[in-house]
Length: 368
Ligand code: HEC
Ligand code: HEC
Image: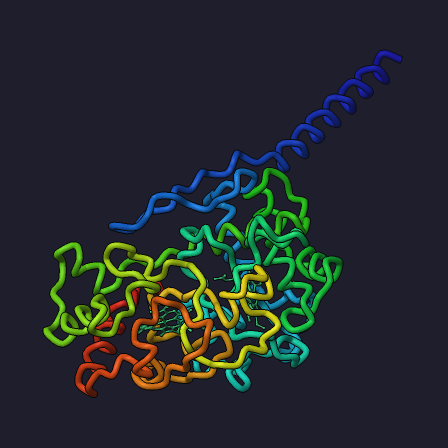
């Protein structure tokens, strides 16, 4: 009888130890808070929601998910049925499409099923400094009545949209749960190994917010670390003067180093406005016909194709448009001071200087 009691005690103790080990195995430390390194001269006000603080482990997980070809809900290896965010937002191209992307058809990306997106893709860079709304028309913002307000919301939209990843929550979650690396990564980022769509959205949004570009030749010039060539300097002067190329009102300069105001303008591309997803479609303000968010010109040399509809394949085409292709209409932004001349009317050598300056905005470190 006594012997039996001892066995029973030993069995209980062993059981307790096993249970303790099991519990320990699933306990994770709190993730490490991540402070975004704000580049020289950049604004310090960041757009980070209170319920999704940046962490080292969250960004690490987000990076893996952003590039995971199974994010579209397929577990096979056939490249034609695989797609991730990186299929359209390619790091080497400023997280934009880039001119040679196999997904690029007629200036616009096609989603997993071959359906084209309504607009050209956008670069994903310095979005943590943008407080004016996301997407070309800025409709992803706190005023969106359909609840599409944040980068977290964009993640789910991209996963479900029939012109993007064309998946469902259930399919994508099943594909991610089939990958043995994720439980631990979710554990480290969120405290437990559970893989939920809310966590997928949060992690990818953290990764997107971590994409900060501020180390171009031009930045090093502002800090006195590198010199611009006379041609680049002349291009810079043209960029920032009204009688020159007059670009700075909308695309910023050293005073607003994001190289965009992140605001919305009609820059004279067209004189008939039929796009059902321009800025007007969101605000209903007459002045917003044909208006879109001014893209940042950082890394612009590698972000082709250009404009909301991808109509220009090269920077030369863009500069040719601003030089002599402006279309007058009642909706052109009053900041397009040269509209009545049809363009800024620079000489070919001045245009070459302006282009040389734009090329100094490339941040090789960011694109690597
Ligand atoms: C098929 C190509 C495609 C895929 C795949 C794709 N996107 Fe996009 N993305 C776009 C297009 C096109 C836009 C511009 C939408 C618009 O404004 O009409 C965009 C815009 C965005 C924006 C807004 C950027 C800004 O400056 O406002 C974010 C953020 C974004 N995408 C993140 C993602 C994430 C995260 C994923 C993966 C879950 C993803 N995208 C997958 C094509 C794509
Ligand atoms: C009135 C504001 C305004 C001015 C001034 C202006 N732009 Fe723009 N720019 C925009 C807007 C808005 C867009 C996006 C338009 C669209 O897609 O329909 C844009 C788009 C661009 C693009 C394409 C970027 C991309 O990623 O697709 C480039 C390059 C560009 N502008 C360069 C310039 C240069 C160079 C100048 C000076 C010669 C200039 N802009 C003057 C507002 C402006």
